[in-house]
Image (tube, helix red, strand yellow):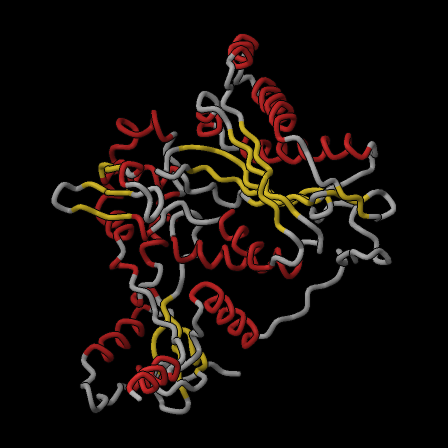
Length: 435
């Protein structure tokens, strides 16, 4: 009887969305405390290891420090049933610095791959890594990262073309540039999702179930050497030295397979490919010593973890912020918008129309899309009322600083049982959005 009642209590209340509290995270506190100090000492202390200072980082950090903070603006989410409401702060949408926004971006990327881009064929995950000696070249010349990703695709394409002996053969690949290792050290490498086969000029699918990873490593190594030599960064003597080593540090792995029916595996892999550099679950700040205890992975051997000076840790995080307006996700082959080799409409893999105008999207659909995104990330519905379980709706977006301060002050001073009467200015701000 007691067990039945306990089961009923467990499943009666649906999961509800709880807004996050970014100020409570150690990463937010580290940025707030040490960012200005790191910036002031960058040239003398950090430039040699973490590259030149980039001025746009200021704006990225300021936006991150406003992410999820009510004082920076919010939306009002209201329940018509019980008249309850909560404030949803705005997001910064910055890349590689905000774990929350990166998680949402990863969910969008996974949904895009699964629902819109990828064909219903078998795919393999490819990982291309570089030796430590060559990694600094890409730190001080970040414009080469896109060419590095291109070299990875050409490696896959040329080996598949050689396997099927067809010059018109085209696979599809989505490549993601990652620059961080487990402890946030600089480690540029490519994560890619490539078809295990491709299409010929007639749009027919030709499977290529096996590519030798060692041959791919040799070809990728040749392309990287050529890339750096053409830019005047690598001499013939340095290339000969690297070629003479028994283990050159290059590595190519294509052992992970994603089958067409494995939607969960595909989504999990897509999220991993563009995950945030910082894992908040393994980050611990030690204020007594002003150090950071950072675990490589949660639950692994503590010996694999590292204790880092707080300013050093902040510098590592800033090093991985990508250049503004520079893509780090690249589409190649049949997955490229410019490709003329996509499968034909009359084949079993229908081609997506390139010239079709995108449909107009209303504000309500955009808000539903936001709700779907939160459901993907947090497995909860942000539009379910935490009190009565009814459906909630977004009333308005508040962006004016004066109105924001007045609303927050009104909510702060509101009694527990009865609400204080709002002022005329506050009443105007609380009006819902016009349809």
